[in-house]
Length: 196
Image (cartoon, rainbow, N blue to C red):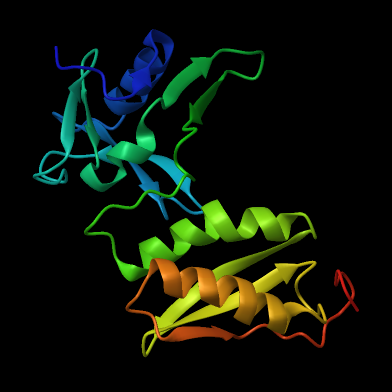
């Protein structure tokens, strides 16, 4: 038995095993992965995985009657993840808790986008949250981070100052290959703005 990379409870293994047996595909398993890992939009997913559909670098967990394939890129985001099944009057529910799925991580070989998202989530957005706002990365174009403000920052009279004095300084300090930041927010919508 290989080491459990994530925790899949006995009841979840039984439930998943029943679902897989109904597929009538010899050797079918499940694949666990995170879409948009390290962002607020991260989703932890479980999908059927027919023989040959797993990737060579997937980590394999041998479970009761089937294998779970853990996507290599998602592995660190799935640390401490728990898959459970609880029976109830309606039949039951499979739940997935992955507390690290939305936590950005960076390393020396992380892309510029990954590093920008990391600093937005860990350093910039916590300060903006005090005003009910946040900023997200739209894209990186011509070495400029294209950002969009939301919440209390959209329509805020101080957004330009926040962008240049706070966000741009922080990102240029942390990511030297960036030339600057651009704002694509429509600030004419001022309904929830912190400073009008």
